[in-house]
Amino acid sequence: MSSGTGAGTGLVSVSASVSLDGFIAGPEGSGFEHLFAWYEGGDRTFPSTHPEIPFHLSGADHDYLTAAMARMGVLVVGRRLFDITNGWDGVHPLDKPVVVMTHRTPRDWVERYPDAPFEFVPTGIHDAVAAAHDLAGGLDVGLNAGEVASQGIAAGLVDEVILDLVPVLLGGGTRFFDAIGTTPVVLDGPEATQGHRVTHLRYTVRRDRA
Amino acid sequence: MSSGTGAGTGLVSVSASVSLDGFIAGPEGSGFEHLFAWYEGGDRTFPSTHPEIPFHLSGADHDYLTAAMARMGVLVVGRRLFDITNGWDGVHPLDKPVVVMTHRTPRDWVERYPDAPFEFVPTGIHDAVAAAHDLAGGLDVGLNAGEVASQGIAAGLVDEVILDLVPVLLGGGTRFFDAIGTTPVVLDGPEATQGHRVTHLRYTVRRDRA
Image 1: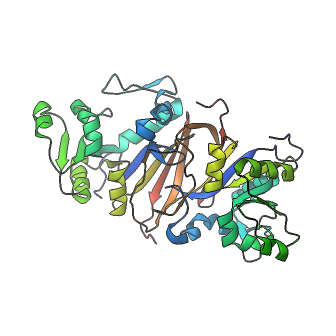
Image 2: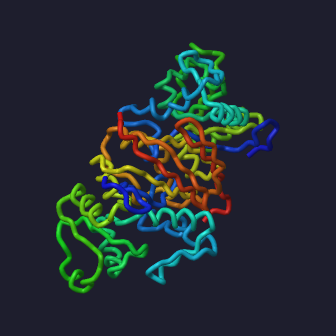
Image 3: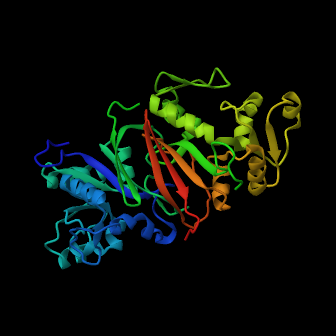
């Protein structure tokens, strides 16, 4: 962790909208109308670089997301999400630089979006997080839920786990946590914020873990 | 649902202490020192029929558990938990009647504990819940997390889902929810209570579900 120079403190966090049964996407990519209902839960507009991905939030969710994004410097995502979104055409909706964990840099994409603040790291989670810290300027690093977050937790790199817990059971799909190993990871918290059809729960990983 | 005659209202609920990654038991039955830390989180004693299973709770957890148990009439459990505990030697720690879902009534056990308020139902979740309602006298019916709860949810029999959410990642083990089908189940809530190393989150299943 680098020392903080902005609103963030150089922490590494994982966060996602997640169902009560632990899914960040339902079967065959379903369920997003539930998981992201809070993005459309009010009349407070939150800036999006992509007009097709708007945020109209409740007051509580707007305050929560504003604070979360002020802390956030860089996002780390996996190749799968990058491919699904075509790298958000070079601009992440939250207007943050992005580190992509991938075995192979997508040369075509880099040529098409030469100014995109994206970095491709082929050498694993430790190097990806280190690259993100370098880009983050003391702000926090956010690991995408799923495989990236699970690798980060398994490697002991994660300081905060944030569940945006949504009142739905999806019954299947993509899990927030996967293959983090069997060692218990003990946390403290949460700091809780009730939003519109979401409960934001922010936990801190205990460093003297069992 | 029968109409309520006591503190409960004849609702069917599922509840369990659960890790942030959705496990009610860790790998090979580990993790209980984390999942049930809140049972030993303070100095308020809660009655237990089994001196070896004491409850020493924080004030918030004591108030929460007192209210929950006042509503609760009957518990429904699976045969596996019954076997592991030897049917709690005929008296559940929370001093409630128990309905056991099982293909075969354990005759030896019934002969050894003839006065135990246990009923064995071989004909599935609908009959087990109906038997529990009959025994509950208008109080609520609690389904044990795991297979019983998942069958109850899949059958549309569950009114409330209660997560006693514990700040630990266990990485594997027995999941709270399993095989509930792929239909989204939409809930409302939660009613939240912060305890000692546990966040109690009580959700209501929405009946006009999608």
